[in-house]
Image 1 (spheres, rainbow, N blue to C red):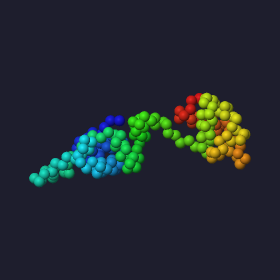
Image 2: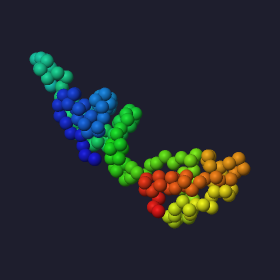
Image 3: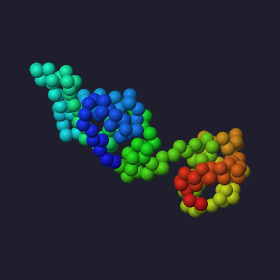
Image 4: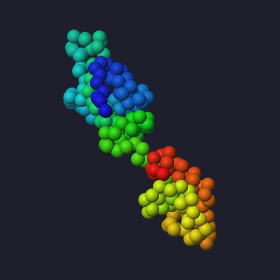
Length: 179
């Protein structure tokens, strides 16, 4: 990620933050306010050049000119601290900085049998279709520690071939498994 670089009025800096992170003006205002408090002294990354003097120049220039030369990653961390909702593109960028693929995070639903099938896939370490998991149905549940809608009151697995194929299809689309 590159830097947010801007010199100008308070509004120009806020607009630069909003454009750099693809966030709303209100959220950019929050980040600006945080930076103004956090960087009380004029630093390399953020500061204010107060151009008012006793002669009345403050009437012409307003409250001063601000500057920002801040890596987007730091601005993203500030946004996360302030609980600002970020777009998927920004999250992907943060994951890229950290060396984590953004596709690495998925919600696996154990109630629908997804966790069970993923465990079985990892145990066998081979790509197979829905027919390869036929041993699950009708037998005692092999993952009885999970909450699953396919297990009956006697602890037997009743997952159907269609349900298995649906879960495996989701895994393939999400590139969790390769079959």
